[in-house]
Length: 120
Image: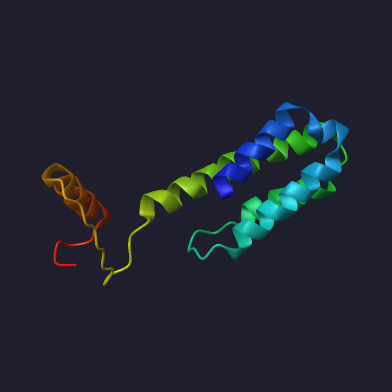
């Protein structure tokens, strides 16, 4: 999950790993870049990838941190947009079985919230 990867990388930066083991940061940046480039989305990640590339070639820890802040903030924005715009595909059918009337009502509300009509 991209959000978890960003959280993990942030913890590395907070522990100053970018100073003591820059190769670990580079490995994580490569993984993050690959994850972003393989997402099937209409949201452009070109500038984020550009800043990741700047991190990969930076020699000064302060430059790495500055670019990381940009990457972190923009990746979080993209993830939030993906989550906000997520929709269950049309013609999705769901089955839920429960012997409790209250639970069935909750399940019905849950399916309505997801956009799955009662007929499906």
